[in-house]
Amino acid sequence: MGLFGKLFGKSQAGKKISGQPNFSNIQKTAEILDENIFWNIIDHSLKSTDNQTEQEAFLINDI
Image 1 (cartoon, rainbow, N blue to C red):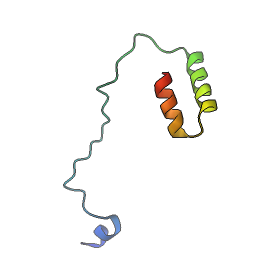
Image 2: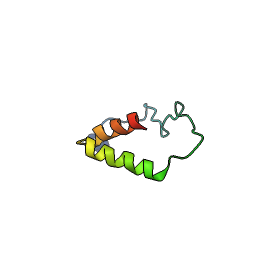
Image 3: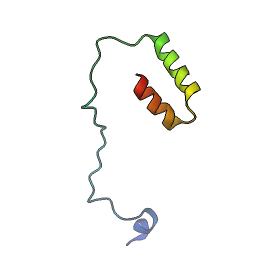
Image 4: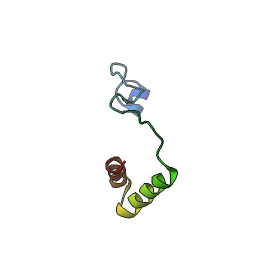
């Protein structure tokens, strides 16, 4: 193992890394969410959760 291998770990050459997220399960909507409703949802999520992970789960369920 060379100097860079020691610094950065094993070579990742054999692993395929996907640069694009999978959006195949997202459906298009017919209309845009009203801005006031959007900010009310965000405000409610901030008041109802303690951290970013909980807020993300809250938003996924609410939206």
